[in-house]
Amino acid sequence: MVNFKSGFVQQSSSSTYLVLGDFYTFLATGESTSGAYALLEIVMQPQSTVPPHIHDEADEAHYILEGEIEYQQGNQTIVATPGNFLHFSRGQSHGFKNTGSKPAKILMWVTPAGPEQFFAEVGIPVKEITSEEEKPSLFAPPTPTDIEKAIEVATAKYKVKFVL
Image (cartoon, rainbow, N blue to C red):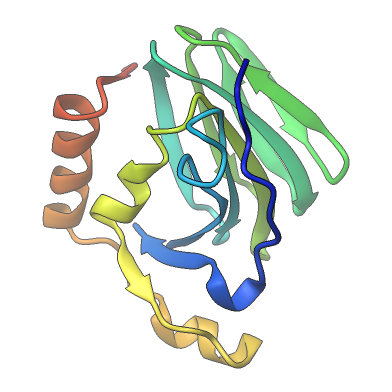
């Protein structure tokens, strides 16, 4: 039986990272769930893409809050909109792209917790943002070096397999 810690996470106590142009905010971590799961909010910029990949050690689920996201789940293409929920089992290939012209917002669950630490490791910590107008000033396209580092960390430390 898992013993979850009860708690309330205030927005000011969550951590946000800028990862290859997108925001990843930790809402619940393995530390606060006894390693059972992690919950993150992702804000994807227009046309941002997460390439198809496989992770064998965790399940992942997405709930779309805003925007239109095109998913590749195995050989299937799915267009998800607000209110849609997708689950990716361990070992299942999946990738996704914000096909809209505005940022998209996703809640992402990872179970068990652990793989979400990839975003903290390769991302840039973002201090508290006081307004939506501040967000665009944080964006810069990822450099080839940023992408190489992310791929290296994902494959070596987090055992992610990219599907080409």
